[in-house]
Structure formats: structure tokens, C-alpha cells
Length: 212
Image 1 (tube, one colour):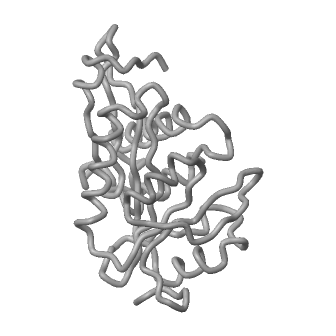
Image 2 (tube, rainbow, N blue to C red; image 1 turned 135 degrees about the vertical axis):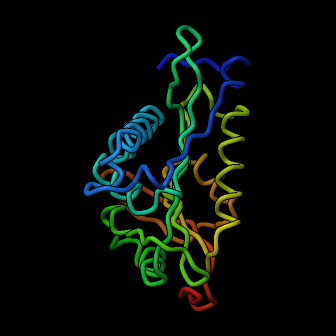
């Protein structure tokens, strides 16, 4: 992906979200052309931001979670300096999970063998927890205003939605730093595939159980 952190590129950054009408139909988000384009672009942004298959998202899982909680996902794109077409460069995503799922993730991390065990529900409340699915930007735009804009948007979305706490699984030092900026701290470690990963979270009681 030929993206350079020029002032023109950074000024062209756009945040793109799905309209509710684009996630209805027998196949949900995949029923609508805009929904399919959104999922494809988010998938492209994810695979462009990560170097290994262990870190990259599975397309079917991505479509599944976007379909269940589309309002938690924001795609970021910039204009190609040569032809003006939009290029997907990053995205953020989160969804609500139950208190029981939160407790399993932070209390039994060694038993987690796939991130798909963190199962989305559709309605956030003051008794549910936020699972931060992803925050990533392509390498040329990291540590630029594009990334700062993206993370401010994620923080605002999380803070303004009802929740009892939040959690994330991180795979890098940069990911750990962002989790800490979002108010989380490391709670556990786990191994998924060949990667060592870290569980960050908030909302734990003194005994280690989820507050509900």
C-alpha cells in the first residue's frame, strides 16, 4: 500500500461508519453493497497493518462481529495522492460482552485458544463490558495525526457508551501503551497460535471477579 505521511494525505483522512440500513437483510451486513464494501475495506486495513497471520483478523469472524455490533466499528481512509481514490489505512472496533465472558477472559486467560471465545452481544448496558476488538493503523501513518485522531475517536466512543468495564487483547508494545491510555492495565498473559498475547482490562473487584 503506497501511503506516505504527507500533509495532503493526513488532511484527507476520513472516518467512515455504517448506516443502520446497511446492515439489514437475510445476510445482515453482507446483504447490502455498502456493507460488503465496508467489511472488505476493514479487512484490507487490518491485513495491511499487521505482518503475521496470527495477528491478522479472519474475514468470517470480522463480518460476524461487525454484523452483530456495527456501531462499534469505524474505518479510516485517506485519498491516494495519484488518483484520489480512498485507501483503507486503519480502523477501530469494539463490542459489548457479558460479565461472565469478561470474567472468563481475565480469570482463565490460559484457557483462551481463540479470540472468537470473546463473544459479542448487541446491546451495551451499565452491566456489560466493552471488548476492544482492534485499533490499528498502517505503518507509514503510525505516530502521526492520523493515529491520534483515530484513537481520540475510539476513546470518545468507549467513554460515551454505558459499561461496567472494558478489556482488550494486545499483541505489541504499542498496543499495550494504547490499552493503558484507554484506562486498562495488564491482567493476564496467554498464548494464541505461536504468539504471546496480553489481556488488559478494568472493572475488576478486589477478588478478581467482574463487578456487575
